[in-house]
Image 1: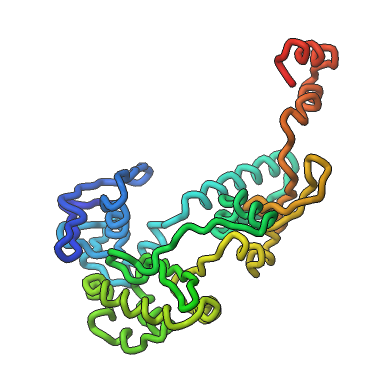
Image 2: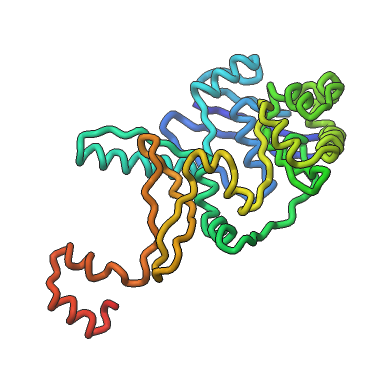
Length: 317
């Protein structure tokens, strides 16, 4: 299905790929591994037709990408290729398995929902809970620019009041004009250095400097509201405390209050990221150590005398 021959890619003087040969047939599984900066993402983008190779050929489903126009490449990506987030995809698979068990036991089907936002929240759940309980949250230093890059629409930019806006337009094709116009850089959208992907990559430092100055000219809250209509991907960088008042998180019931194990006042935690039939999961506190040991063993058919023997032997608590 995917065939690459003598594939090469350069960005200016930097050679990223050299002489890559690859055959991936229908039903095959291929894994690309390597350290950061070794060209993994570039290879995948070339294979998906998002970036043109500097040398060699690529064909997908028998279509030579070098001879295909953007409409054809886009259609191939929609029908033959896909890009997914690993963690969200794993959680979605877990939700599907749960729905299959539910259907086997009840005969009822279930609709599954998992979002990138809920996945990220769940992954950082302990830190979010800490922030809600203490009012304090750690923030790692964020770079105020893209740094060395071939894509000025991929990086962190500092606002006038010290906030951070993350641009995450991995493939700028089709987004360049809209992004520049939203950033107030109307002339840049018509500048031949930036108006197409290849010259944009070649002049990434100049474009990044324009974007850096534009975002630095306005406060964080301005960009947070203004960029809502931008077609490309972006996000405001928020602390864990900021997230607790995020309008999307609240609308999706991503915070829930649970009872304390020691009988103290209830506390807030992040709800599980999977929804069934648009209903949030029932979320409870984690059990105390050995809290349910006796109940579980009795449900498995063990009598109380045997449980007492195991306790006396130190096998269970």
